Image (cartoon, rainbow, N blue to C red):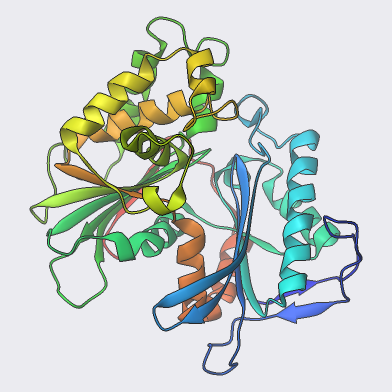
Amino acid sequence: MTQRSRGAQQGGPSGETPPGPYAVDTKRPEDRPGHIYAALDLGTNNCRLLIAKPEASGFKVLDSFSRTVRLGEGLAQSGELSEAAMARAIEAIRVCAYKMRKRGVTSARAIATQACRMARNGPAFVKRVAQETGLHFDIIPPAEEARLAARGVTPLLDREDKGALVFDIGGGSTELIWLDLREAGKRPRILRWGSIPLGVVTLGERYEGRIDDPGSYEEMVREVTSHLSALPHAIPPGGHPSGSFHMLGTSGTVTTIAGIFLGLERYERARVDGTWIAHDDLSRVIDELKVLSLEQRAAHPCVGHERAELVIPGLAIFESIFKRWPPPRLRVADRGLREGMLLALMEGVDAIAPAKRRRRRRGGRKRNNKGSSGAAGA
């Protein structure tokens, strides 16, 4: 994929004028020493950027950016991205474009996920983004989102177990990936994957104004469970086909759970990322969190005002997964999709894929409100 930035269309965050046009490509790192990579993820709720350079042990982060843009706000009711939401997203993407220029990024990929997949005006929006910011986004399918999320958390998998269930609770959808860890020395193999069109924003909007009403939480859990039950290729309830397994979660919901479990007075990524939580401790934190009032959640140092409402639908999604496939323990990841994108770029995986992605986009998209899944190799 080649990203072309049209230079000084806008100033940087501090008002300075960025440098002129530049091009970035996806040649393999050995072909271009000194590559600097960028991964940009535009989700239903957030716009996130990660800039890094390769190192022997993986990569070193040079810069990052995250902003809540609420791109999917009102999407479930209207079927389209609103003008206000698109404007918020474009403003955040402009900041990302500036940071990429300032850091001298040479190889990049930008993706859009569930909100743009579901919106009738999603393709038109990404064209507008390219015109206004110079950054070209791929609207990726759920299968690719699941693959990239799994790749990003691979370093945290415990190969002493025979399998793992990785999940990513996003703003508009939730991805689940069942991994086989039995082949020592090889990258984990995807046995099954699934995606449901429920995330913290989409589920939260269904219960807007009544999230804290009596019975609403239990209703959300039932709704999520119904979607999980309908996945055609999902693993049956209970265990894991490979044998002994653990869960690995990547989302704001599970990092919040970890922060509460650790008793943090403020969020500390270094302590949260990689934390193990046993089954009984997870049950205890779930029970503690779901009975807190909106005011209590907003005042909690590991939740805060911004996530005080969204954490409840996120918790309902997590509890549904947790009860359907109960794990002995969970590992928490403050990493995921962007890290997977960076690793794929550095390994040259996405260097040959753009033509296929363009052909797929020209062939049209089907909106799926029931979720999707697949078997190994999907």
